[in-house]
Amino acid sequence: MSQSKKSFTDYEGFVEKFKTKLTTDDCYTPPAVYDTVLQWLRENVDIEGREIVRPFYPGGDFENFDYPEGCVVVDNPPFSIYSKIVRFYIARGIRFFLFAPALTTFVSDADCSFVITQVHITYENGARVNTNFVTNLIEPRVWLCGELLRRITETQEKKKSLRKIILPDTVQSPARLGAYVEFGTDYKIMRNESTAPRSGIKDYKVFGLCILLGRHVADHLRTERERTERERTDFFSLSDAESEEVANLTRQ
Image (cartoon, rainbow, N blue to C red; front, side):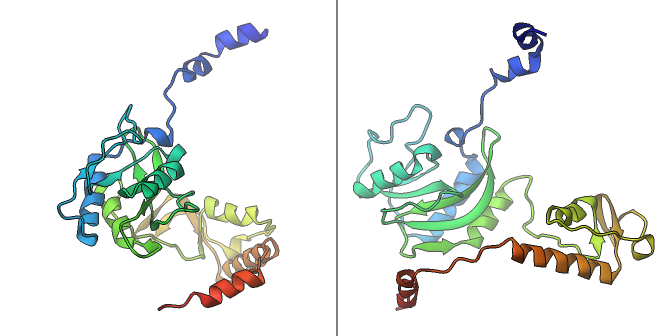
C-alpha cells in the first residue's frame, strides 16, 4: 500500500490530529476545588481584607495585570512557565498562593514555601494532574498538608474516601502476581499450595478473580521480591559538605 493511500485510509489517525490536546496550561480549575482551596487558605493564613485576584484566565497577561495594592493572587497558573511566574511575583513583592505541578513543585533561587498535598485534581478539560501549592504567605519552607488533601479529594465527586484497602499477601490477583514477575521471580505455585480462583474474600470483591496462597508461598514471594529490590537499588550517600549542612539543621 502506498504511503498516500495508507494515510487516506487511516481515518482515526486523521481525526486524532484535529483533537484538542490536554496540557497542564489549559487546566481550568473546577469552582468547587478553587473554593475549597481558598477557604482552607482563609482559615490558615491571615488574608482578611486583602483582595483576591485571578490573573490566569484565557488570554490573560499576568505580567501586565493590574495588581491592586496588598492583593493576594490565588490561582492556577500555566505550569509550563510556573517557575518564571513564581520568581516574577517574588521580585515584585506580590503575595500569592498558586497551584503547582507535583513533579516540579520546588523552585530554585526563590524565597517561597511549598504546601505538599500530591492531590489528584480533575480539571475542567478532563486532565487529571497531581497538584501541590507554592506560596509566600507562610513561614515553613515545606508544609505536608493532609488536611488540604482530604478537603480537595472530598470535593471531587469521584473521590469520596481516602481510605486505602491493602489485601493480605496470601490473596493474589493476576495483576498482583505480575508485579513479582516484573522483579524477575521464577516460581511455580502448585495446586495444593493455592485455591481455585474466586471473586473475593470476606465481603470484599476484587476486580476479576483472586486466589489464596499458602503462607509459605506468600512468604517466599515477598522474600524474593525484597532481595531483588535490594540488588537493584543503589544507595547514595551525602557529601561531607551536605552531611555538615544536615547536622546544622536544628530546630531553633
